[in-house]
Image (cartoon, rainbow, N blue to C red; front, top):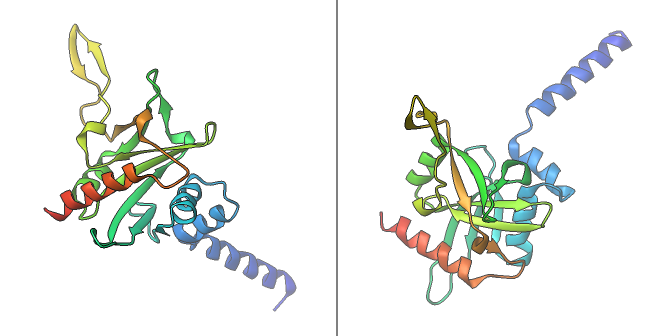
Length: 193
């Protein structure tokens, strides 16, 4: 076989391998350098808080699967995390962050048997914030607009909704009992269904 054909064949083989990389493999590559928001959230839980943080292998709307070891009073608790990066969030005047969530994903979070939390990381302030994706109090009010003198919902069949990550929902670099209590309450609520 001519050398040129061998080079073309190898090039095609490399492209096929790159295209076949799973999200987890691409994520591992990004996390190695520590620059991705997903990697920073994973390290927060795994390295700093000593919780078992596993990246999700397939892209099903969740980035991390977190497991908290049980103790004498509580069983092992698991929850899922969807990570949002600085590029995906907007900041409101009151300081809260707004993150978009596709409507189909939001419905998926509501129906899931495990609690789902949205955790955002802001590169500028190096801070994390959270919201329980299944708690309707974190839904951001939808914007309204005037049309022909009537106030109507903008884009009735919305492809995405917005969730609010308030200032008081900031995650500390050290372990936070308050967040653990919220996770366990969400776990119990889902477990009762």
